[in-house]
Amino acid sequence: MFDDTRLASIHQKVLDGERLSFEDGVTMYRSPDILGIGHMANIVRERINGNDTYYNVNRHINPTDVCVAQCKLCAFGKQVRDPDGYTMSHEQAWEVAGKGWSEAVTEFHIVGGLHPTLNLDWYCELLRGLKQRFPTVHLKAFTMVEIGYFATRTKLTIRQVLEKLKAAGMDSLPGGGAEIFAEPVRRIICDHKIDGNVWIETAREAHNLGLHSNCTMLYGHIESEEDRVDHLVRLRTLQDDTKGFQTFIPLAFHPANTPLHHVPVTSGFDDIKNIAISRLMLDNIPHIKAYWIMMTPRMAQLAQRFGSDDLDGTVVEEKIYHDAGATTSQSLRREELVRLIREAGREPVERDTLYRRVERSPQPDTAFTILV
Ligand code: V47
Image 1 (tube, rainbow, N blue to C red):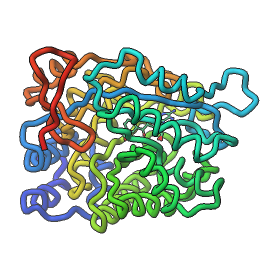
Image 2: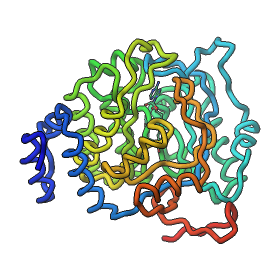
Image 3: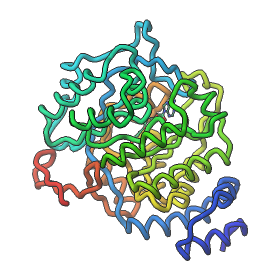
Image 4: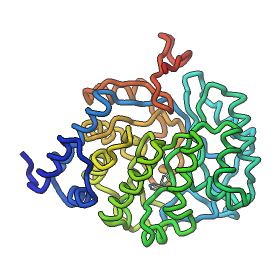
């Protein structure tokens, strides 16, 4: 059945619902049998999520691109004195949140650079102001890296920082900043970020406080196949303990305008394999997101048959990938997401950030109800 006979024993494990090993992960990354791997990933995808593909109506807000980290992987962060850098005032951020806003939006995705002078109270006030103005919108805010940085700057513990942000309105956390946990690679691509262990322990604290989060892996730079599998296994181990991750998002490295601009862009083959292999390795994370901004809508659509069950959302204004050369549009309308999903033979399900179904009234872009 498989072009690559090494996949036969992995297939048996998948049919038996048995956990795949580190070696299985490496074998799949080294295999060219994309159809075999995709077939197995589709079995798991349909076992967990049936025929549903999720999407949401969201808006990204990046309050500042000023960043002390200066990671080699990034084209978004600007140095403090860079005249191209920006930092929004609270009023500007609240205004951006409201631009084109209608009651249709169910999520604000809020991340930014590691700003050297904005303090934690500034971020709490940002969240409080958003909650006050948009009380029905879920605030998915701040990567584990930002949380770690706030803790270092305030000399509070990570738990105390999370408690303060939660009290101010933070509802969950996005999955960014995980990059690759393997230390030798992490030291090269993002030297000044929290290390992999701190990322994991920050996620653990968030989950222990009842906050869900997502998780990511940045691939297609200088990491090895073993580094990728190591990353997935570390996430899987934490998830066994906390069950706090909702979605895993494999993120393809975009080299343009970064210090690593000489690295070739990932192939469609690798992008699809990362979706499928993550679905197979992360047996305890319910959703695998094909982030269309990063993959292009056409690849994200294909991914719905290779292990993914989520396309992310309308996004509205994306900066991190577009600064790094992404040629996708900055937003998609709900009807376009629905069409992509239907064309893939899947059932579109609008969700909120916590994967509860969103029911719309016949009047588009107005009232919605979240079905628990
Ligand atoms: O943490 C930065 C990555 C992430 C580049 O949780 C780059 O729902 C490629 O985490 N090329 C931010 N990647 C995006 C992110 C995310 C996106 C969508 C949904 C969710 C979610 C999370 O983007 C960063 C970093 O890993 N990144 N620069 C680059 N040049």
